[in-house]
Length: 171
Image (cartoon, rainbow, N blue to C red; front, side, top):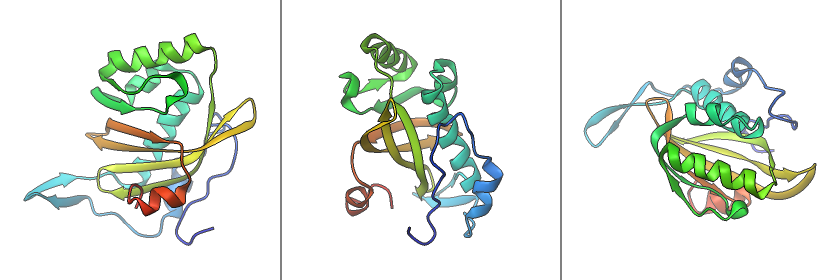
Protein backbone atom coordinates (compact mmCIF):
# COMPACT_ATOMS: atom_id res chain seq x y z
CA UNK A 1 0.00 0.00 0.00
CA UNK A 2 1.37 3.41 -0.95
CA UNK A 3 0.66 6.50 1.19
CA UNK A 4 -1.92 8.81 -0.36
CA UNK A 5 -3.22 6.18 -2.80
CA UNK A 6 -6.83 5.12 -2.56
CA UNK A 7 -7.29 1.37 -2.65
CA UNK A 8 -10.80 0.59 -3.80
CA UNK A 9 -12.51 -2.55 -2.56
CA UNK A 10 -12.55 -5.47 -4.94
CA UNK A 11 -15.81 -6.41 -6.55
CA UNK A 12 -18.06 -5.75 -9.47
CA UNK A 13 -18.69 -2.18 -10.55
CA UNK A 14 -22.40 -2.70 -10.00
CA UNK A 15 -21.62 -2.48 -6.31
CA UNK A 16 -20.85 1.20 -6.72
CA UNK A 17 -18.91 2.96 -4.06
CA UNK A 18 -20.19 6.40 -3.20
CA UNK A 19 -18.32 9.28 -4.70
CA UNK A 20 -18.53 11.25 -1.45
CA UNK A 21 -16.68 8.56 0.48
CA UNK A 22 -13.93 8.40 -2.13
CA UNK A 23 -13.65 12.16 -2.46
CA UNK A 24 -13.34 12.51 1.31
CA UNK A 25 -10.42 10.06 1.30
CA UNK A 26 -8.29 12.51 -0.70
CA UNK A 27 -6.48 14.85 1.63
CA UNK A 28 -5.04 17.44 -0.71
CA UNK A 29 -7.37 19.82 -2.55
CA UNK A 30 -7.03 20.44 -6.27
CA UNK A 31 -7.18 24.04 -7.51
CA UNK A 32 -10.21 24.90 -9.60
CA UNK A 33 -8.07 26.26 -12.44
CA UNK A 34 -4.56 25.89 -13.73
CA UNK A 35 -2.39 28.11 -15.92
CA UNK A 36 -1.54 26.36 -19.14
CA UNK A 37 -0.04 28.15 -22.11
CA UNK A 38 -1.11 31.51 -20.70
CA UNK A 39 -4.77 30.61 -20.30
CA UNK A 40 -6.85 29.48 -17.38
CA UNK A 41 -7.94 25.88 -18.00
CA UNK A 42 -10.69 24.37 -15.87
CA UNK A 43 -9.72 21.23 -14.01
CA UNK A 44 -11.53 18.31 -12.55
CA UNK A 45 -11.90 18.05 -8.82
CA UNK A 46 -10.92 14.70 -7.36
CA UNK A 47 -14.60 13.94 -6.75
CA UNK A 48 -15.36 14.62 -10.43
CA UNK A 49 -12.41 12.45 -11.52
CA UNK A 50 -13.58 9.56 -9.34
CA UNK A 51 -17.18 9.92 -10.52
CA UNK A 52 -16.14 9.95 -14.19
CA UNK A 53 -13.88 6.91 -13.70
CA UNK A 54 -16.71 5.00 -12.00
CA UNK A 55 -19.19 5.91 -14.75
CA UNK A 56 -16.74 4.90 -17.50
CA UNK A 57 -15.85 1.51 -16.01
CA UNK A 58 -19.43 0.97 -14.84
CA UNK A 59 -20.73 1.50 -18.39
CA UNK A 60 -18.30 -1.12 -19.69
CA UNK A 61 -19.03 -3.65 -16.95
CA UNK A 62 -22.78 -3.12 -17.25
CA UNK A 63 -22.59 -3.50 -21.06
CA UNK A 64 -24.36 -0.14 -21.41
CA UNK A 65 -23.35 1.47 -24.69
CA UNK A 66 -25.54 4.53 -24.12
CA UNK A 67 -23.87 5.17 -20.77
CA UNK A 68 -20.44 4.70 -22.39
CA UNK A 69 -21.26 7.25 -25.09
CA UNK A 70 -22.64 9.65 -22.46
CA UNK A 71 -19.20 10.01 -20.81
CA UNK A 72 -17.32 10.47 -24.09
CA UNK A 73 -17.04 13.50 -26.36
CA UNK A 74 -18.51 12.87 -29.81
CA UNK A 75 -14.98 13.22 -31.26
CA UNK A 76 -13.26 10.96 -28.71
CA UNK A 77 -10.06 9.21 -29.76
CA UNK A 78 -9.52 5.81 -28.12
CA UNK A 79 -6.69 3.32 -28.03
CA UNK A 80 -8.16 0.21 -26.36
CA UNK A 81 -6.36 -2.97 -25.40
CA UNK A 82 -6.03 -5.45 -28.24
CA UNK A 83 -8.29 -8.12 -26.75
CA UNK A 84 -10.84 -7.53 -29.53
CA UNK A 85 -8.37 -6.80 -32.31
CA UNK A 86 -9.41 -3.12 -32.60
CA UNK A 87 -6.28 -0.95 -32.57
CA UNK A 88 -7.90 2.48 -32.23
CA UNK A 89 -11.10 4.30 -33.03
CA UNK A 90 -12.45 7.82 -33.34
CA UNK A 91 -15.76 9.39 -32.43
CA UNK A 92 -18.98 7.81 -31.28
CA UNK A 93 -19.16 5.78 -34.50
CA UNK A 94 -15.77 4.30 -33.64
CA UNK A 95 -16.93 3.51 -30.10
CA UNK A 96 -19.98 1.74 -31.55
CA UNK A 97 -17.76 -0.29 -33.93
CA UNK A 98 -15.46 -1.26 -31.03
CA UNK A 99 -18.51 -2.26 -28.97
CA UNK A 100 -19.85 -4.38 -31.87
CA UNK A 101 -16.44 -6.07 -32.26
CA UNK A 102 -16.50 -7.03 -28.59
CA UNK A 103 -20.05 -8.36 -28.88
CA UNK A 104 -19.17 -10.32 -32.03
CA UNK A 105 -16.16 -11.86 -30.27
CA UNK A 106 -18.53 -13.15 -27.60
CA UNK A 107 -16.10 -12.50 -24.78
CA UNK A 108 -16.75 -9.71 -22.35
CA UNK A 109 -14.31 -9.03 -19.62
CA UNK A 110 -14.87 -7.57 -16.18
CA UNK A 111 -12.81 -4.57 -15.11
CA UNK A 112 -12.04 -4.15 -11.41
CA UNK A 113 -10.77 -0.75 -10.29
CA UNK A 114 -7.96 -0.74 -7.73
CA UNK A 115 -6.90 2.92 -7.82
CA UNK A 116 -7.89 6.21 -9.36
CA UNK A 117 -5.22 8.86 -9.82
CA UNK A 118 -5.21 12.34 -11.29
CA UNK A 119 -1.73 12.92 -12.74
CA UNK A 120 -2.64 16.24 -14.38
CA UNK A 121 -5.44 18.81 -14.41
CA UNK A 122 -7.18 17.12 -17.33
CA UNK A 123 -6.10 13.48 -17.01
CA UNK A 124 -7.38 10.61 -14.90
CA UNK A 125 -5.61 7.26 -14.55
CA UNK A 126 -7.79 4.28 -13.68
CA UNK A 127 -5.73 1.30 -12.51
CA UNK A 128 -7.05 -2.17 -11.98
CA UNK A 129 -7.28 -5.57 -13.54
CA UNK A 130 -9.21 -7.40 -16.24
CA UNK A 131 -10.97 -10.63 -15.34
CA UNK A 132 -12.64 -13.30 -17.45
CA UNK A 133 -15.24 -15.28 -15.51
CA UNK A 134 -13.44 -14.51 -12.26
CA UNK A 135 -9.99 -15.42 -13.58
CA UNK A 136 -7.34 -12.71 -13.68
CA UNK A 137 -6.37 -11.99 -17.29
CA UNK A 138 -4.06 -9.00 -16.88
CA UNK A 139 -3.28 -5.86 -14.91
CA UNK A 140 -4.90 -2.91 -16.66
CA UNK A 141 -4.79 0.87 -16.75
CA UNK A 142 -6.55 3.48 -18.81
CA UNK A 143 -5.45 7.09 -18.92
CA UNK A 144 -8.26 9.38 -19.99
CA UNK A 145 -8.04 13.02 -20.99
CA UNK A 146 -11.07 15.12 -20.11
CA UNK A 147 -12.50 18.36 -21.47
CA UNK A 148 -15.77 19.91 -20.32
CA UNK A 149 -16.52 16.84 -18.22
CA UNK A 150 -16.28 14.39 -21.15
CA UNK A 151 -13.56 11.98 -22.19
CA UNK A 152 -11.77 13.25 -25.30
CA UNK A 153 -9.01 10.61 -25.36
CA UNK A 154 -8.40 7.24 -23.75
CA UNK A 155 -5.33 5.00 -23.83
CA UNK A 156 -5.52 1.53 -22.30
CA UNK A 157 -2.51 -0.45 -21.16
CA UNK A 158 -2.06 -4.07 -20.10
CA UNK A 159 0.78 -3.34 -17.74
CA UNK A 160 1.84 -3.21 -14.12
CA UNK A 161 1.54 0.07 -12.22
CA UNK A 162 5.31 0.31 -11.62
CA UNK A 163 6.13 0.36 -15.33
CA UNK A 164 3.48 3.00 -16.04
CA UNK A 165 4.89 5.14 -13.22
CA UNK A 166 8.42 4.80 -14.60
CA UNK A 167 7.17 5.90 -18.01
CA UNK A 168 5.54 8.94 -16.42
CA UNK A 169 2.09 8.01 -17.69
CA UNK A 170 0.24 8.00 -14.39
CA UNK A 171 2.14 10.44 -12.20
